[in-house]
Length: 290
Ligand code: DGL
Picture 1: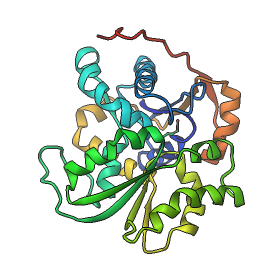
Picture 2: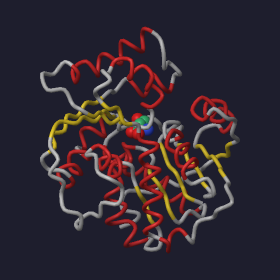
Picture 3: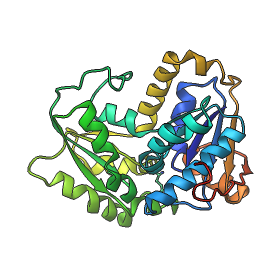
Picture 4: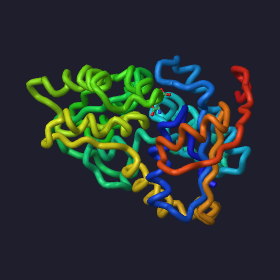
């Protein structure tokens, strides 16, 4: 199975697109609802929670894990890729959503190879919206400076959007007020961005309201489709991983909270019913994996 991890329900917007793009592949979705949201947590805690989730997915038999959470990708992916996997799990791979989304934000096609593809000379202004932790990590800035150093990036954290989505408040005057609160500063600039990335997996649930506010000349990018396209491309370039993945079209859902509660809420994100089972993540003391 391909393991797909998010702090909560938001990653289901990515899973939906992955299933559409790779319908034969088997997926196991893990949602750490008991500890969500991650967006305002410290980098150390996000790293530990993410590692615990990734290890759980490995133990369930996933050779490949996708962090379908910007906060986890921004704060934990590099450490997992550079330290954890080479030392402890050399046969497994973990991918995130920041790199593929930064490629799309720069207008680059899938398949840019870090270190091999020359930086793009494209210029202009683009923006990313995300949680406080994602924005303060500067993960998008770091990727864009490598991919397209002449592009200017505006970063805006939207700390109240995830709670609105989790509470099911995706429409109405109150929600609209909070959409304006974070979009207006971008749109009222003398030099507004030409493309805005929704750099949080919860935000596509607010897409209708966002599109009503953002003028048609500014492109709004949601992550599901672009991450799915780039994962399909990555699998084409890594057949040694693709042959290890089950392709019976199975989908399983696990949560660290109550499975029945997860199933009733997940329907809002997936538009079809699911069954979930309980995930008991192991707690790892600091230094356990050193
Ligand atoms: N889904 C997470 C992301 O993409 C945000 C939710 C949270 O704060 O846990 O950043």
